[in-house]
Image 1: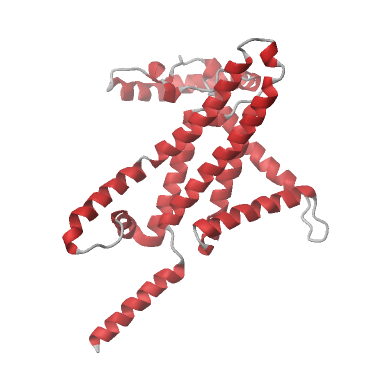
Image 2 (image 1 turned 90 degrees about the vertical axis):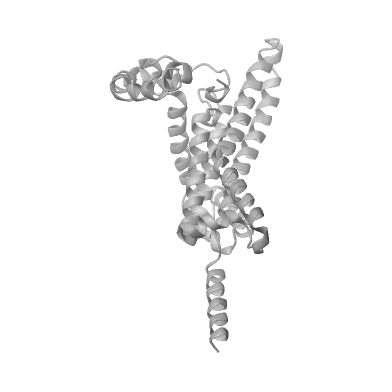
Length: 298
């Protein structure tokens, strides 16, 4: 049940209890009427029940899961933080928040340029959203009354699937469905090496198919472990381990949050770079093809 573990051992945040207290009952009735029967039919094929798979009984107290509430809060916080840093934009007298935002903008822009290429600027909104949203989600666990939504595999898998869908959409829109599938076969090899091409194709298909899983598990495992380590170490020998250790572990947690946000964003850019090509490359290929056709015709 590791993959369906939720949080790092913390109690349910007060805000989650508050929301479920007022909204949980109607949501619970909706689940019992519509979603639970669907899950029961699905898991019955595997000889189990949704309660066993998700590790919790349906009730108004957990009708809206903590990670859903925390992720919605993370989304709202992300918008608010960007708005707060942006402040009143000024070229003559930029404020510290604006300078911070501009530094982050330039950092992400430079990474996109070096990994995807100069044509990758159009992917900046998606890539930057991944970076800021995941960073905010990771850091939420460092504050009282909050938990990191990325400490739930449900959230990290959703983020992994989002990245997977986006870069495949980019590949199909730029290269066409056949061209996108063709790139899995690698570079063009001589006819005698067709078995190698087929082998590369299937390896690439499998590798790409598990990327949502690897993206999600990597982010979840690190954030889950960070919160679990914090709880276990601070409870080893209270109150001694609850005096100085939390500060050290909080610093470690911030570092892990930054690294994991960076890794997820970096991998997403690498995946986009694999399927995205500068427009002039396509034009050059067409120009070369036309040139070869003209020479052959002559």
